[in-house]
Amino acid sequence: MDKRKRIVFVNLHSDWMLVKSAAVYLFKYSAAIKHGYLLKYLLDHPEYEVCNYINDRGFSWLRNDSIGLMKFLNMFRFAENRKTMKVNGIDSKKITVLKSASEIKPDDMVVLYNVCSDNYRGMDGVHAFKALSMLHFHGIEGESDVIRRADVSCLFGEVNLETNCELYRRYYHVDKPWITHPFVFAERFQNRVPFGQRKNMAFATGTITYKHHKEFVETYIDPCDQPTRKQIKDNPEFFKDTVYCTSSDYLEDDAGKKVNETDILPIKLYKKIYNRTHVGKQKKYYSFDMVEAFNNYKMCIVGEEILGIPGIGFVEGMACGCAYIGQDMPAYRDWGLIPGIHYITYDGTKEDLKRVIEYYQMDDHQTELEKIARTGCEYVRTHFNGDAVAQQLIEKLEEQQKLWLEQRGK
Image (cartoon, rainbow, N blue to C red; front, side, top):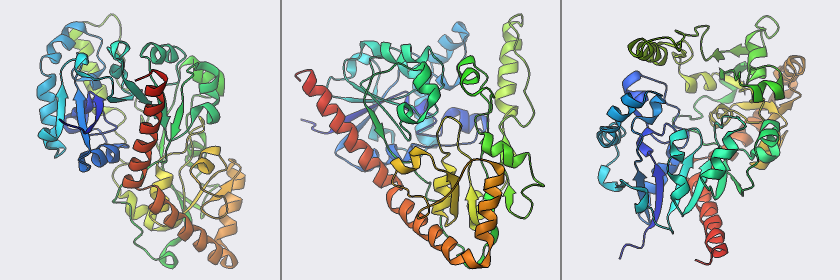
C-alpha cells in the first residue's frame, strides 16, 4: 500500500507560479516562477506523491471567454500537460495525473493559487484540505465570495494580508487560518563581487503596475501599485549620484489594441493574441543581467507595493550582498528581519531615501554599511532559500491539515 502523502495541484501545467507554462514557451512571456522551489522540493522527497488534477479548463492561462474556442482547446489539455512537463525537464512519471475531482481523496492536501482563477472550478465539491496561495491576489470584493464557495481550508502567502493590507481588510471577508512564509531567491542570485569593489550607490529596480478597479482606487486613490518605484523612476535628476534606476512600467506606454464588444470573433482573437505577444514585454527591463547589476552596487532598493507587500527582488538583492533599503513594514519583521541589522529603513519619501543613501555613502559609514549588507546576506541565504522555506511551509500546512481533520473527526 502506497503510504506517501499526496499533494494535489490543480492544473499544475498552467500554473506560472510553479512551472514554465505554455504562455512562457509559446509566447515568450517572462518567467517569474516564484514557487518553483516548492514543486522541486516535493519532487525531490519520495515521501510525497505529487498529483496534477487537470480540470475541465485546458490552456487556462488564456483566460478566454469564447466558449467555443475553450471547448476546442480543452480537447488538448492533456497534451498541453505532457508538453509542459517536457519543457520543464520534469519526468511525467513522477507526477500522478488526476482526470476527475472524484479522484481527490479526503486525506489529500490540495494546493490552489488564487491568481489562477480556473483553480476554483469544481472545488466546492472536493471534500479535502484545501490551501490557497494569495500571492498576487486580485483585490476585488467579489473574490472573497469565490473563496468561500470553494470551501478553502486555509490561506497562505509571503505576507499575511489580514494584518498588512488595508485593501484586503476592507473588501475581503474570509475567516480562515493564515500561514506565512518568506520569499525565495533563485539560485542564480549569488554574492560575487567584494563589497569594496562595488559602486557606492543604490541600485533601484522593479516593475511598475497599475490597478484601476474600484476597490483599489477607492482605497489608495492613485492606481499605481508601486508608488515608491515610480517616484524614483520619475525623478532621475533628484537621485543623481545616489540611485541608478532600471524600474520599468509594465506596459511600457503601450496599451495595445483595444478589444471592443462589437468586434467579430476573429478580430477579437487577433487583438488578444497581439496584446499577449507584443504588450507588456518590458524588453529593456529584461535585457540586462539582474545578478550582475546587484553585484555592481553596495545598496539596492525594490520599492514595496502599496498593498503592504515587498517585492521578491529585495531578497534577490540581499542574496547578492547588497545592503537593502526598504520601509519599516510589518512583513519584514514577520520574516525575522531587523532594521539596522539586516536592512536599512526610510520613511517612504524621496527626500528621506536620498538622505539615507547619502548618509551611507560617507566614508565614515562604510564599515556600518558593509556589516548590514553582510548580515542581511547571510540571513536570507540561510532562511530564504528554497529547501528551507519549502520544508517549513509544508510542515505548517501539514499541521493545519491535522487540525482540520481533527475538527471533522477524521
